Length: 332
Image (tube, rainbow, N blue to C red):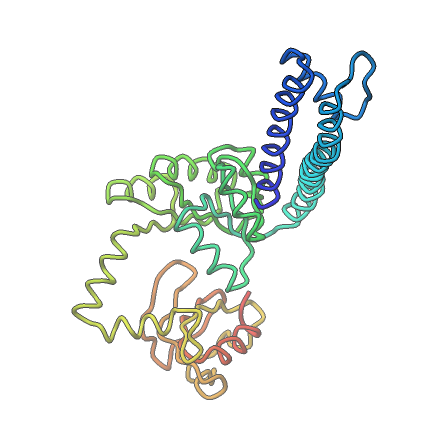
């Protein structure tokens, strides 16, 4: 941006010098404005005076002044312009090639559709959690922000097959539809599900009617920012301590206590053991507050006799270092 401002100022200075040169030759030599303009350009271009040239002392001194300041200004302006455009082209050429190679390597990642207020926050959180993702955005000015943030991205509409394929929708784990309108999110979900029926889909919704429609076309989870925000605000009034507990266990910045979901892999030593036999409390210092079965069924506060099975998702509560240690041996 600063480079572009320098070019703008340089061009204004160059135009000012051309105007001053034209008026100066007209005044000192008595040439017409057209002839004076031509003589000014010839002077700045350093191509010499082949047809007519200043004859008066005043005109010649003025020509010297114009050559000293004008030629330097012209050379500086064009040098800045060439540097900007050449550097931009090269950066775009090589940068895009690198970006395409990175996109082709992406696998089991998430696709974020839209880089608005929600999209920015989602990307920031996923970056903190070291989760791979690709952003799809069509607005050129917003794309520049994504590039500055060093996120992987595809420029275009998330409702187009080609753009989704460039983002690796066929290899993705899930897609987050955070586009400005429910209609756009709905169409993006239809397109994505057509290309990858097994894709997990999370979408935002403006109202309950849209929420039903989005789920009907394939969204696995639909969230309303207004509804979720209102619920948390109400909770802050009527049950503030519960809200404090939720924030402590879900915020990435909290190192005291966190809540995580850990999927039990097929080779885990926990399979076939009860929660009591697993020794999770003593070995890792964590508490299992819920279990989500592969079928989707949720078991809250499982008792000590619960038998752990493959692909169980254990919703565990504990310190971050203990959860990280537990995840290394059980997460898929």
